Each structure stands twice: as C-alpha cells, then as structure tokens.
Length: 132
Picture 1 (tube, rainbow, N blue to C red):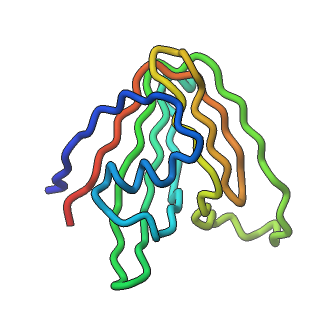
Picture 2: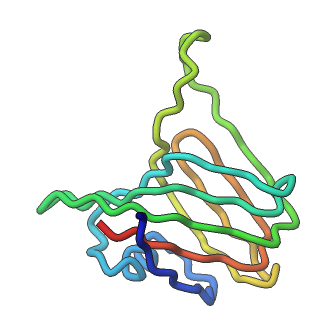
C-alpha cells in the first residue's frame, strides 16, 4: 500500500521555488527535480505531476506528487526535440525553473523543464511526499 503524507501549500510568490520545494520535502537543496508524468482530469481542471527528487551525495531518490485542482487557465509550451517517430516513450523532464504562484487563482504556477513549459492558474495546490 502506498503511504504518503500531504502538505497543503499556502504559496506567497517566491522567485526561485525549487529551493522552497526541497525544504518542504525536508531534503537538502542540492538535488535535481524531475517530472516523470503528468495526468489531466476533468478536461484540465485538475493536474497531477508525478515527480522525483534526486540528491547526489549520498544518493537518495524521493518520489512525490504535485496536485493542482480547480484549474482555470493552462498555457503549454512544448519544445521540439529530435526523436525517431516510432519511439513513443517519454523521458523524464528535468525541472529547470519553478514558481509556485499563489492559490485561489491569485498568481499562476510557472514550470519550465527541458521538454515543456507550463503556466497554470489554480485554486489549490497539494504536495504529497511518498514514503519510501
């Protein structure tokens, strides 16, 4: 059975939220965030990011889920990468920059990875850290 704990975020608009996110996970800010998958529900009114955070020394990998609900507006930017047309596997996307924004649609979340960029106006953001 998958166990996790939920951290409800009340975001205040930090400039570089990767550091803040690592603190919320209770981990050092020396790691790398990756997005493994994204799921949309309710025609995009809910988004779930399945992520991992890898700390280099000692090597530890922590999985977590970032859940956005009550989404009103989404803006995607997909970056072109050379890939064979028959290869339909999706690699993990490395998180380059993150601004968590503010809930209740006050400030949008901004995500930039090496494969996509996303801006979302959301109502509620939840972080679920999965227990090892």
